Length: 414
Image 1 (cartoon, rainbow, N blue to C red):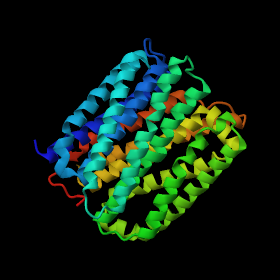
Image 2 (image 1 turned 30 degrees about the vertical axis):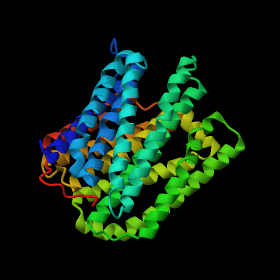
Image 3 (image 1 turned 180 degrees about the horizontal axis):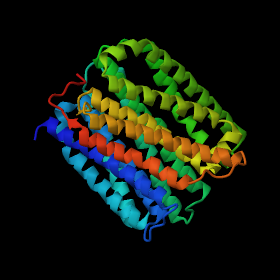
Image 4 (image 1 turned 90 degrees about the vertical axis):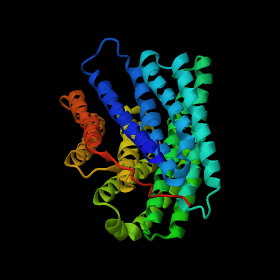
């Protein structure tokens, strides 16, 4: 099997996982109003989240990074990729059955160790590239943040062994992992791939602005974890650190806006229309993400974000679905890994985005109505289930209407 066909299988499998993630999410929303015997909400939630992070996003980034920077070495990643799938399938089976227990922890630990292997090998392979592009600097930092995030899951094991499951320390370990996945690994990988698109299409952008954006994001990333701890009502200096990190992120957003403003016209002419639309959607989602993080630097909002579960879920979905997933669909289309020219594929994208927008509207509206003393939305759980169903159905349509191309490898790091 040549490298192109192999990477095609990796991309296809990533989308299959995304479909499963969506249907698992719908199942979780269904049992709020239609309980199903034998379905443990917490266990299935663990399966849903692990499949989302490690089945869809990790695999998608794995395929994208190998394809982009080391396509000639793709076969040397083959065994690693399929071992990762053993870990993913193991988690998909064991988490819904037993939650965090010996088997599921074994598979999740295996995935972490394999992700270390991937990070180390990719960093070594790209060390040999000449004239290292700025895009690769983003990617390499993203991988380091991915490794750093794994402290959270390892800490969870020790915390649970001491009988502290559900404690503040337990929650802080979860937030540690989420922060360095969302603000670190996912965000830096997205912007690495974005700047690579600009580089290979000769789309002009200010290198100075891009480097300032990079360094502001870097400097802010580690202290921004404090924003995830404010619900514990820590010492005043933690609030100050959180506020300063939120300001740094706003400054980074300012430079990103300057970059987009300059590159916008070229992007319209040199990228495909659907890629531009999906990138624009992801860009707006990223802006919302940064603004919500800034708002969470204020104590009242921080407490509200933690105590009202809908706000937390809504934020996580804005990043996961609106920002990262939408960007990746557009990116795969732009580099000819997939073709979305069919009506079915385009309809699938529309359904996916519509389901995301409607579900976010309901998720944020419900607690807002409660706080205003207006009670619950009629058929809240039923409505959330049906609009959420648009997302996996949309991805199913997308995959059914997509042609997985890869007739050549158009991107190279050399």
